[in-house]
Image (tube, one colour):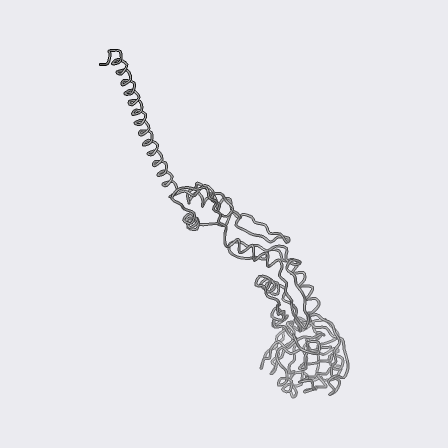
Length: 405
């Protein structure tokens, strides 16, 4: 039998074991409680993050160069519109981006679309970067335009035009390209115009003597007859060619004329642009010729031109003009030298200057001598005998040149 002492020792040992069991049990219970607590906290935190992620961007999201991490769609939209560049310039051969406060950079629906792309159930630190497709495309196009080169063809000549040398600034703004500094291009086209234009050009040309079409050579100057480069339209055409990558521009599509019609007279024609159909008036000899297909079709030996002695307003202006239109019959109105008005009825009227000079019959005239024009000529028109006017009318063509010398 165990002694009392042994029983006491056994009892102590059992008590100690029971205490250990109790302590272990308490620890286990505490661990379980902590685990449940931590788990619940984690679940709550994840739920909170899930809820947050449904309305907020992930932390490392950049749209159009603006960081929008942890922002809502509305706040991100506002921030982008406040800070993102929305205009591109190709300025002095360099690409520059700026922000125009008058232009909306992005709308909330586009930001929402970006939000949907980056959305995850739980926030993550992955980097998301979204750039404007329009601005990216614009940047590429501006770089191409900078390298663009166009051959400008006009009047049988070709001119090489390089965008880098002639365009100082191109702007991409609100979905459109604008050439905002083209002074260099405009200057170049003006130089081309000075080389090729025929308006106000002075040159030598053969005119009839008798029935010989090239009887002698005179020096004359185009007045209303001729053409020039329509610089404004040509500039736009070259800009478009730079933008589209076209290799050539047909300059003949961008020319103009002066006077009654803005038709470009004489472009592409031989004989200094005069061609082989024209009218010639000799003031000194008081003669008129109409040339058709390079031959003299009509020759009048006794016309009367504007009064030579007196004011310039009554003289027939020299130079190359063109028939503005034909009218039959017509009433010519104007002022006499004394200031009184006149109204003269004619059967055939063919004006060639805006000041009122033209070809017409003059039934009232009695003096058809070679010296009549010196003191008793017309008010500037070319008077033609009524018996001869029909041959002129039948052979004159609207817009054809009239050479007065």
